[in-house]
Amino acid sequence: MVKKSVLWGGVIVCVFAVMAVAEAQVAKAKVRLEHADRNDDGVVDKKEIRMEKKWEQRRIDKDHDLVPDKLENKARVNTALEQKYDANQDGVLERAEAKQMIKDRYELIKTQGKAKVDTAIEAQYDANNDGVLDATEAAAMNAANQ
Image (tube, rainbow, N blue to C red; front, side, top):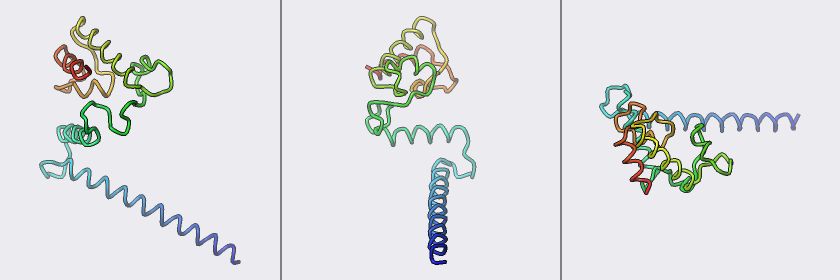
């Protein structure tokens, strides 16, 4: 009987702990949505989402090199293009690998005039958010990579 009550007590404590964590996450999400709603109309539109993403990137990337500070010299491989440049196939794009990818993409865009945005790095330089990097946007990306 004592073992059962101790077990149930432990279960109850765990349930309350999970509820507290979930409540904290909901509160954090609510604060982020309120922050993103710049015109206070109760709706977060596409422009506000883009603004929030840029703000978040600046907040987590203090040196503005497009790599979050906690991943300073590496980033998880998310696309087929990034996987092509992951030389050691460890699922992480090291700084040197990312620099080579940016350099090659710049050369491709320089010769072809434009290319589809395939990575988060490229998306940062897609100034008009059309999903395509043109020569001007690619030049800005390459210059920041130097």
